[in-house]
Length: 316
Image (cartoon, rainbow, N blue to C red; front, side):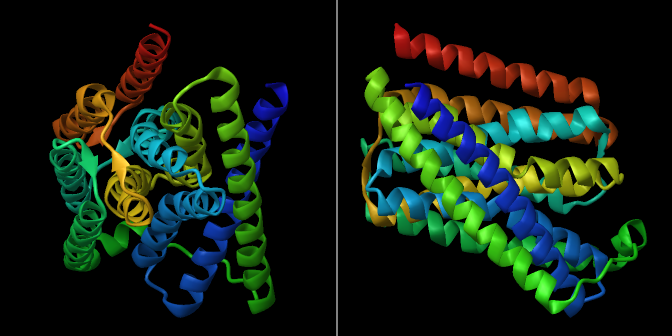
């Protein structure tokens, strides 16, 4: 079992380093193509939110571990709010000056409800995966329109000089990031599947608690950097976008690959817990226009309570 834990720990580190390198590469390419700081920051946040999950799904597909992938994307949705967003708020208050954030929060709540409704019949079919992907495309279009409407008003808040790198350096960053993401995902899936076997746990639970946390932590450096620079909007946006995209885009991709049974705990506990976290985030942002350190601590405590309850239900 120690070898399995070692593989998981190594996978987490490689995934974090790979995502950081890849996200910086994407930011560099965006800076070369556009001088719009708002677009560059959103591009970096979206890359940090989506790429680790996509890499893990590919690794799980190659190793025929659909339940691990399913659990990981649901667990990442929860951990992005309870860990990534919470820790970023503890670093600095996260101001919510962009209306796009409210749209993302509502989209996340709608995504949770949609996933719950699709699982009522006890099965997530390939058609359900297509519905989730279509919903993601719709949200992405609405989100892009919202960002464009805010560009002129928000540009003075985020304009900053960007350090430009040469083409060779950017290519190296992206290639190194992709390599580390692949190796990290492979180690995580290998360690997670072996750990589930040794502990006689459902792979979905291991994916939710272990691999989901790894996916959330992979985007943590980008969120913390945004918070330190006073650009808390992008830490908020990254966490909300990552949670929403995990449920719609990544989960939809998993279901297109392999239909899955809707386990009772998902309907009764995990999805309601995610809905509660997302619903709690909305008034926190709207009350004073910021997510404070105290509110970040509440989100982190709620996630720890979720993990404790999940473990209790597993061992009960």
